[in-house]
Length: 225
Image: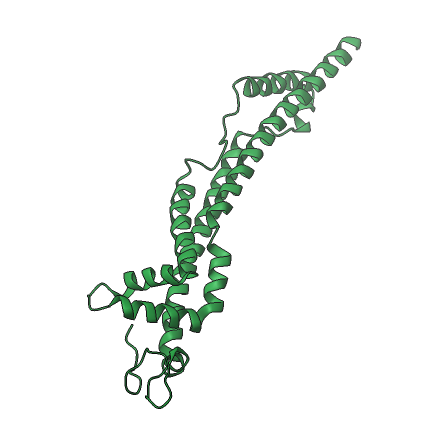
């Protein structure tokens, strides 16, 4: 990032009567450029974090669709009408077969494409957010962003890192706080997904038992008649 040259020789500590200026004066002279540089870093991190969260949301919807598709739902209509007993017996048989076959739905988010893609994006976003919050990490990010054409010296990188940190420190801290451990959010979502799948599997067993109990009760009533 190119800064407007200060009076005389900038970048050195102020010395009375020499005309040198310090970092605070550098920042004052280059506030718009410094703020824009910090905003550019933060906006890139935010964009990645938001993309990762969007992919995690897609994965969650895919998981729920799979759980719903593999779940049994109890229906009172299976016991109604003149053929209620036969329908109840069939419903109980089908429910038992579903349970005996084992859980056929997803058991976690792992292997779901948006989740795997999102983890990669989240890893990158978290790494960059943590780097941006550190002087030398921020220097590395700036070197990668602005050093492609060459001519971006380590000294300029260090100065730019200091200026960007001073101009956009609050935004950088906010990005680090929001995205620095984004991968942990993915891990927590996967743990919750596993719990949801186990709960759905147990509900299937409960529904199958409910069908079996009600069918047995209808058989007893039918026998009594």
